[in-house]
Image 1 (cartoon, rainbow, N blue to C red):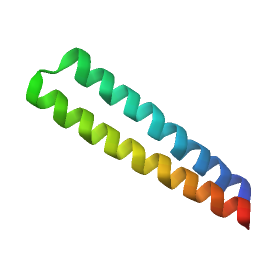
Image 2: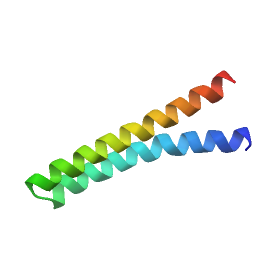
Image 3: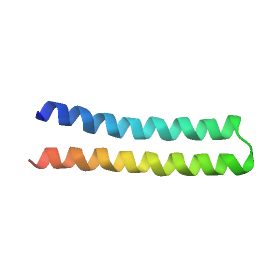
Image 4: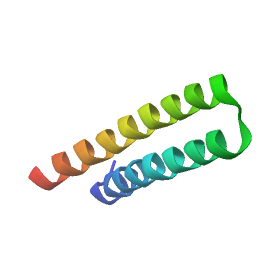
Amino acid sequence: MSREFDVIIAFALFHFGIFSTIFLIAISIFFLTYPYNLIVSTIGITAGLVLIYKGIKLGKSLKSS
């Protein structure tokens, strides 16, 4: 795999993490009732943080190499 492709993947992971977190929190606020909005927002925040972390980790490893 080329370095440019890895940079695009790191950039996409980071931003997909941000947008998916915002999207799932918005869905849980506007469309779901109590027990479900807590579950969906927790899953959204956790998944978003994992994707953001993986994007930053991949970006830092590309920067150091």
